[in-house]
Image 1 (cartoon, rainbow, N blue to C red):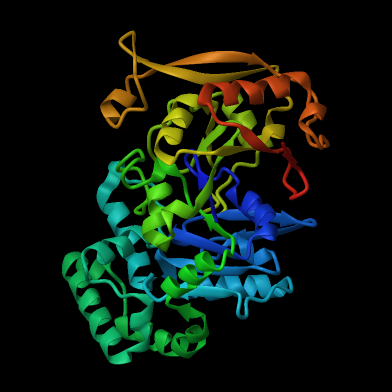
Image 2: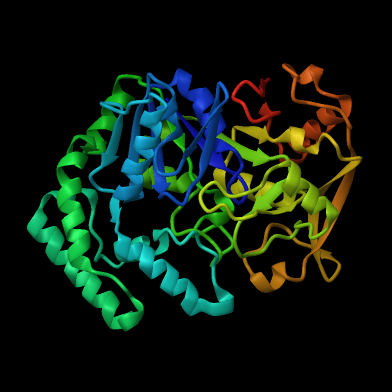
Amino acid sequence: MTTVVLGAQFGDEGKGKLVNLLSESFKLVARSAGGHNAGHTVVVNGVTYDLHILPSGLVAPDTVNLIGSACVVSIAAFFSELEGLEKHGITADNRLFVSDRAHVLFELHRLLDGLEEAELGKELVGTTKKGIGPCYQTKHGRSGLRIGDIFNKEAMDRKLRIMADSSKKRFGDLLEYDVEVEIKQFDVYRERLAPYVVDQVPLIQNAEETGVPILVEGANALLLDIDWGTYPMVTSSNTGIGGVFTGLGINPFKLKHVIGVVKAYQTRVGSGPFPTEQLNGDGEKLQTIGKEFGVTTGRKRRCGWLDLVIMKYSNAINHYTALNLTKLDILDNFEEIQVAVEYKVQGEPLASFPASFDILSQVEVVYKVLPGWKASTTEAKTFEELPVNAQGYVEFIEDFIGVKVKWIGTGKDKRNMIVR
């Protein structure tokens, strides 16, 4: 059976920690979409692992890990992360595979990302400038190259030269790129990459037929989904439950759990709507205590109160069977905590989270004010050991969304997780 872990907000919720915790009970851990714009931090025995394209399950020694067909893969980032894990004594031999149908993210894509952001001016998306969007553009424009194409040197070289020529025609001298340098780099990568490349279809099929439990690690989060997020301030892949099926080809009738990971407050990196953002002392306090800097870019995250309007919308799309509430401890020193429970426009309540930026810019956020607990939650091992008001906060979230909070994160380390 398959369990899926998905980001329920704008990303950076702490999915990697839960995936690493759960992966001890799973034999196959898979990424379904996205690229190395994702940032998953896992802390085990005081050691911090920052992962981007590699599945967090690699930190667990007995798992096989897969980068699925809807992912876009920077080969340079792939090997760089592997080398980082090897320094900590973690090897990926016969434990890490990449779908031959995943798309290759070239240095060309990275350069195009920066140029396209500059082209947008004040309307920029605020991407990580890792090349994710341009890679998905060439994929959907049917001019991209897949991982399997790397092993036909003649065809790969020809297609990459065509891609480079097309980009030069658009950006001219602004694009400082030598396609021949990249071609030579892939001559080095080709042999080294070969042992990791697989046809994922029989891998997934065999796991399902033999009862091997599969854990799917989502990247980014629903509000960054290309279809369901705050478009166009989104990523370029399907980050919700739909992307799991298209990216991995798993059997939907063998799906057991869909776990939504939600931060106890809310953050966002980059541009885009954020109705509960706090541009005040509360926002600064959340940012400072929560150490809210992006794992991938190092950018300061925008901070605000938990938005249950977003969470109800997220649940309507992803159909969570359980929630993991993370970073509850960051709220330990607040006298009171606000939670968004409704949006109004011109005094009229909205039925759901709106698609229109114009409407979002007009919303009046209705908050429920809950009492803080002014006590540490970090050492709590059970729900009952949490301060009474912290228990009340968790229960309010559960009741409002209609989904049980099964895991509660109360600190950075893997052991700081209450399981109910």
